[in-house]
Length: 181
Length: 126
Image (tube, rainbow over all chains, first blue to last red; front, side, top):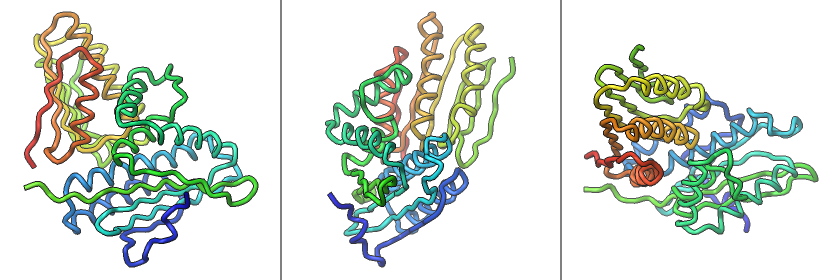
């Protein structure tokens, strides 16, 4: 399934960033998004869901590059786009990965995608309890956490760029919920 | 053994661990890139505290945001407190969540399921 990133109306884009992600940049982006959500008078629930997935998604990418997982030839340039579409927020985080890394990543996220809400909770608790010995063939805690928070409205795309390089895109849709009374 | 008082930063929570009266509070957001660096000294402190805990230990979480690497250490802290509880000491754990923050409520429920120490899940009014 093709990502919706190509159908975003520029007018609906509330934030876009292209460049490397490091701790400082992530901090700045989180602050900016929180400020934008506050100014848009969004509910606490919508803001928290969006910001939580944003933090986890960006830190996932950051760890990938920091921990030497990335191939030396992989481009470290990543992107983030947040758009407001019919009152829902669409979040896209993209980074380049090697073909080998993409294969492993796909196995993980496909595994998460077929889990029910109960399965996600069960696996989340199992990994929390036994992070070192969990070998359930699942994704890491980050992907499970994001999928739970997005209520399942999360997709992962792998777009072939060339023979060795894949563009990995996380796409999450966060439904805007009204403020509680 | 000294108290631990650490002021909050944009990525790490405020920590107030008082050895004499057994009040341990974690407040704010916990989204450090390196959770090990932040939380390991707290776990070491709790190991020492476990050897001679206060008559009553009151652990309070009032978190705003946390990342998944922090969640493992939050569970680690709860496990240390659980040990004190299982040794027969008086322990109280409170997990506060914003009334609009269902995810924080869910995490409290998840953690409550894992540990044997009772966890009071309390709603904060916005």
